[in-house]
Image 1: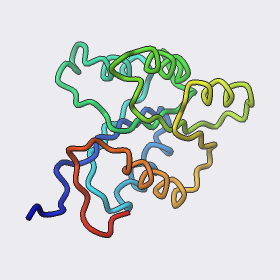
Image 2: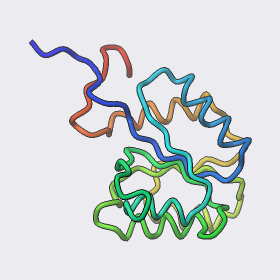
Image 3: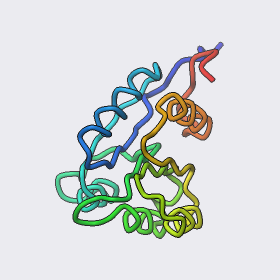
Length: 150
């Protein structure tokens, strides 16, 4: 009989330029008590290199979830999202927008690009962890969860 255990940790890509928000997000993820690995990048240009596995990121893992700030240096988060959704290999990765923007047009554009969720800062990290746990249900089939996790 097959045991119900985690096959591998969830791969999370955090794209956030704020040290405060990034540190709080990483802390919230750790407190969520689920197996994961998180890569934190601080600008859109590096994020696209990572996602497309180019340059120093040629061996980067494919994320299971992307946490994306819209107000990024070099290449903004909306452009990162647009490029992800235009890519055959990246469009199925769930994206959670985490932004300080209250612009309804920006939110509408993100929702048209089929984001998994749109969170305005300051973020309620208890709700954030609950959202990540819900998104685990859509995780790759090679990951088995411990009984009672969700």
